[in-house]
Image 1: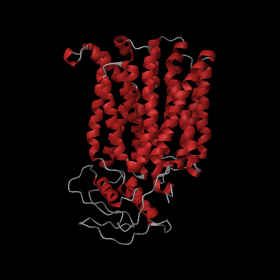
Image 2: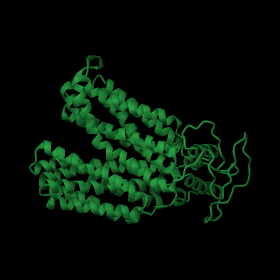
Image 3: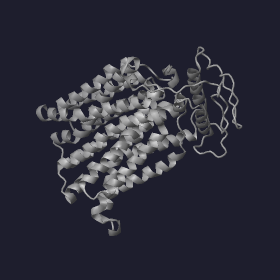
Image 4: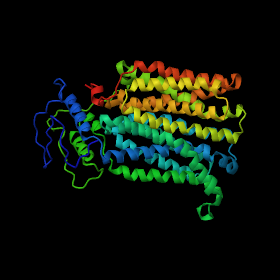
Length: 503
């Protein structure tokens, strides 16, 4: 890992020029060794890839990564808040179980819309712009929920929250992929998964237990009293979002997006900020990594691209993998306690076992982070999917006794989150810059649709045929991933510009 000061050594073949009022115009330099002569648009992309890889990873990249992961972590906690506050809404407002379910549906339904819209607008207006907007929207929704005088306003607040949540992960994934070097890209995206699903889901219930279980009953009247404990769940979740929003003011736009919009001067400034190692460096010297002599044109985003030709095949592979794997994970997220109760364990014991099983998600994402920097995408995903399938099939026959249940359950979560994390790393690599965020948004929605449709089917199987049928369904979904992966391209070790000839 190489660190640079505010004026880093330029990549081979690039002679930067400092801004001293107006930058000189000159002939664009040749692309890096190994590339045939191409037009200025493609030349700028290849030069940009060389610059990004030469800058490497420094403090600025790590701060940006921390901000994105921090936001995603609290987003996942927010997704679980309906389950946390549901019992209090029933007690204080008389909300039925159906009403609680509707509240959850309002959140996740608006997340579908938010993911697609955020991806589309991010390709139009910029990654940083939509990243900030999503967080501001989420914070506004959380505040509405905290102050809601009735159930109808609470539903409206959850819709606003869902719009922000749906876009947050999509734009964050795109931003990290475009802001990092080829070598660090897999690690950065994998760590996003560690902070989000890996740590966020177990942390959500710990947060709820502390807020409404431990502190809530003892709240003084000037803070609303014990009956306001559930409102503080939303208030506290709003505060970290506002902190991240403040920090994001200084985050640069991704150079890759700026080049795709023919904004050479802004791209040079963004690259200079990244190379300085600080998000808000004083006395920044802007360096012409990309000469003004390059004749660039704005790349127009055609949303139908992701459904045609090579990108259409990539979308089919990613969509089937994501929908199948998310569906399998949501099935067991929903039914692990029920399966354990059916095996004769008390409810409290089943919940404790489930929490232990889900530690596999954290370790699985950490393991994937290690592999994604060192191993090719397709074999990594295929092995994880095969092991997920095997562990799901083994559970009904070998999970006899507490130790076997915990080990096999842990292994499934470990392998499936390993696969999930690796697919998330693969996803932004399969789309060009002009439609990358929109493509990720569509794939994210397919995953959420799989997560919404499969649990009801699994519930019918569990009720009529038992846990063996349910776990067989989970194994089939993991096998779908195994079959689909070979049809996608290998992307490991290649820059985003090498993967897509965008002209």
